[in-house]
Image 1 (cartoon, rainbow, N blue to C red):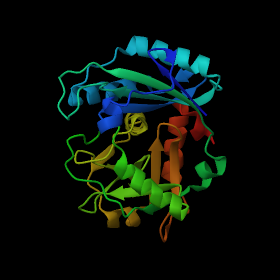
Image 2 (cartoon, rainbow, N blue to C red):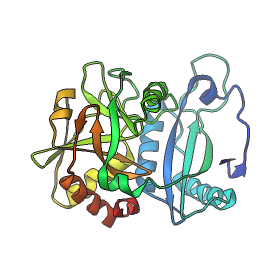
Image 3 (cartoon, rainbow, N blue to C red):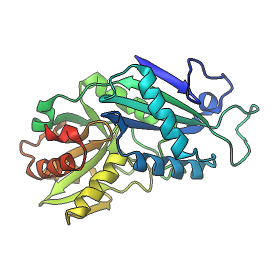
Length: 281
């Protein structure tokens, strides 16, 4: 069950002429709530601010937004130790048509959701993935942002559901690995860690950033670069990152099986020491 709030008050409707509903004109953040606190709050607010600036939406003030989030968690009745929050920033209501004034004042909605931890054995053994047939458009004006338009991810995620995969890995039109439908991807080759460049398309996840920063603090460099489909299957290990589950090793992608994840397990241990409690498993 979800619980929604608008301007700190319970809400159950959105105006039909809200631009979020009409055009997907807005952004969102999905935040892990752990022990009553929003994990990686600063990273989420940094990405939200960058997205608002690119879409020319007035940036919500982080301090009152944080207060509204705390009220929403409390009033939702969900277990504050482990749940998820979704912040939607919409351009709000406007006259019919694509054009709008810039910058536009934001309408902000907060949803609180019950969530379950990923099974412990998946942190140990890894998850099943597949390469999706749905490809991501190149050179999007919103590359890297978490906009309300997620149709490519919806189509790709439907492929995962149909095949029983935990996650689907998406390529761009040039067959370069980009990200998962709900995650970012890292590969390990000869103990060197790389992750796809996202300057052409994809979403820069906050857990991706936290992983890169955590590894850098431990003198481990992650190379952000183009990674082709063939290199994915030739790698020694693959792991996924996501704001909710943290870090997960990949056990299988199609016919390729990775049985050992020594570097990934070291990364997970570092992440566990840096606040990602799920990685303790």
